[in-house]
Amino acid sequence: MVRQSVDEVVLQLDCSTPFAYRAEQRVQLKDGRLSITLRVTHLAEKAAWHGLGLHPYLPRRPGTQLQAKAGQVWMSDASKLPTGLAAVPVEWDFQQLKSLPETLVDNGFCQWDGRCVIQQPDLGYTLECQATGSDYYLLYCPPGLDFFCFEPVSHPVNAHHLPGRPGLKMLEQSESAELGFSLQYNPL
Image (cartoon, rainbow, N blue to C red):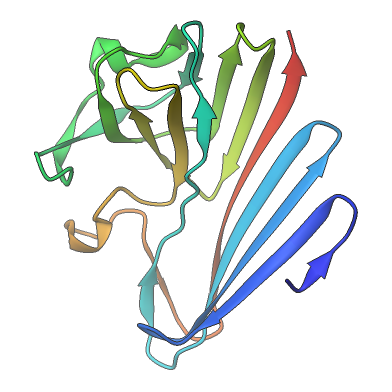
């Protein structure tokens, strides 16, 4: 922990494996808004590819609804690795506020504008969310369980092995990348 106040904490990790970098996470809770910022700074002499992501678990109730616009979705194989981009299926199209599907969703969505709404009528609130540094989100909806994950990420799963390394950034020594996500609580 490098800094702490009543409504904020900053955590830092200096690492040398597989190369030297510094990771920093800032968490702030103020006026009903949770803000999380991730920052990675490349410290090694040789440049390397970097990506960032947050993976929050959220409660799932029968009335939980999601709105998050996406242009395409990464389809995946049995190993959960992406096989190619496709049009977003109707049941996964969250252009408008919509209930989560009852079937498994464990996919990456792209061409995202960084905004989403999570409405929890059974719990009496809405979360208005905003991401920066993230053109992708992962959605994980396991059937029959009481949680789901909405994960802002800078890149799709396995991006290091996809053509063009989508969403990853090549960082030279002392260069940084950042991803932010804020969730504003509003009572219904």
